[in-house]
Length: 234
Image (tube, rainbow, N blue to C red; front, side, top):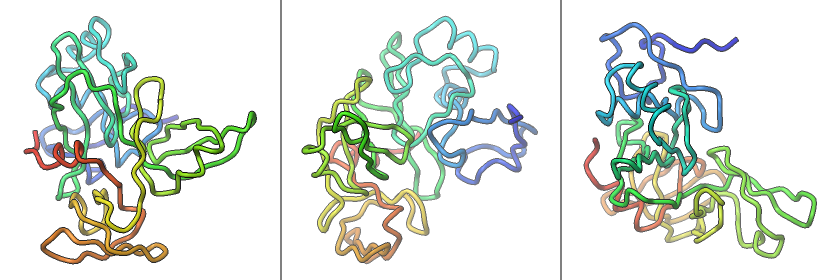
């Protein structure tokens, strides 16, 4: 049985927490994100100053609308990961999760509190019944597309989808010249331009230096996301 808490000293290095202030911290529920790439909804509410204690968090989740990717959530341990959108319509605010240059999961406030679009990265594709293609993403989300449309989508590409119906609005290819955000590795958090892709090796440049990293660390982004990433961390 999975424990609901874990010791702060044993928490993933990606978590931006004070490890000596208290002994335990809530463990995100198993879900679409790996534990090192997600934080609990409780942590989001506390880090954004909307609550201080677990009791306050629980009250908010049961008595107010707290949405994750446009769906109401009531569990303090619900996992919130990369580019997930936490919306608080009653106070007209919304936040998302990114990884900074220190490799820490960081909360960013969105300029558009009613944002209902999300950037996702394709992990794989597979054919299912009805001549449909199921697009599987790194965040655990599955998106359906018809066979003809899905031919344009490749592993490593990014899609902008509308929430909650998951309608595909835009497609960004993982190719030479694409703008990528590095979500892991020694260059985590950097935004760069792809120069070449050779198997699992990616060469890119951020204008100051040429970077060699793994292709799996690259997340193709759109202009709107690039601007968000360049704003100051909360």
